[in-house]
Image (tube, rainbow, N blue to C red; front, side):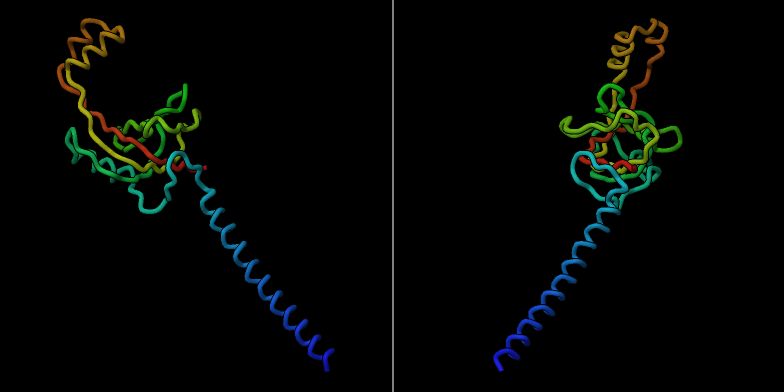
Length: 172
């Protein structure tokens, strides 16, 4: 009788362990699938996801509605037109219709690869419009060695679409 009870408990223990192992196998499979989906992007700066991002044309429309001094929190998808070739500390993103935004990185805390021209990115952060005065533009032109004629031709302030990114996802 003792042997029957012992065999019974051993059998129950083995069955219980076998079921627990199946549950653990299922749990390890699911995170691997999630990593595969996330692995489509390389992340820089703060961790962001690829959900709920605007298109570049929708972002261009937002910029057009803004005045100098306005700031909005936004996430949008675009293509890199150019990137800083020394450190990767800034990039210019396409907004369509020959418009682009100058993107810098929050607290100079991260950089993007130097060879990332043409890459698709999702950026998250603050969009704002900056205006450079005629006086400053003339000063910059003089510092750049422009001719007197070129400097005299500057008569209107320059409006720049700017973006301070706290996180970037770059499509691999």
